[in-house]
Length: 210
Image (cartoon, one colour):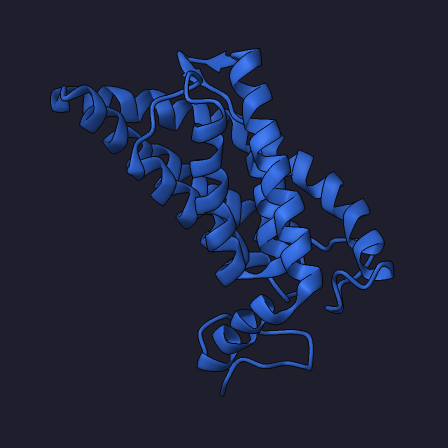
């Protein structure tokens, strides 16, 4: 079994053919242009997130997950990984005063893009998949790795669990709101993307729970 359900739909991403299909995206001009636009959106959203300086429990709230998840869903894991890395590096170059560059955060952007794509690229979109994708990113990327990057930058490794607990509380509090935002956004974006032939996969206009 290669996980291929139809010409445009994959049951799971655990096959060689899935990754070869995703790699073909680099030959698709439309996908590359779309990725470029979404990279610009990630940078703009990140700039506004820094400017707004919204915090929950002493942790800043960022909104670049919205264009990031859309990018990964539409262009796949391979281009999505590249887009995540490029957006983080370009964001620092454009606005170096907003935050300190640290490769760990670039890795986090890469992993988040990969996780979003594995759950949402060329598959039937469901609320459960949206929730699981955001839950895994929030828990593993934002909490576990984010806290590690923070102590590595400060050099105070004894603070890891304090940072992790605060980050976990913040990410779990934000999770239902983030999932709701993504649900309603994708609910209207999917039909538009399909009509514009950006997304050729078979996805129902109504996103089901399972």
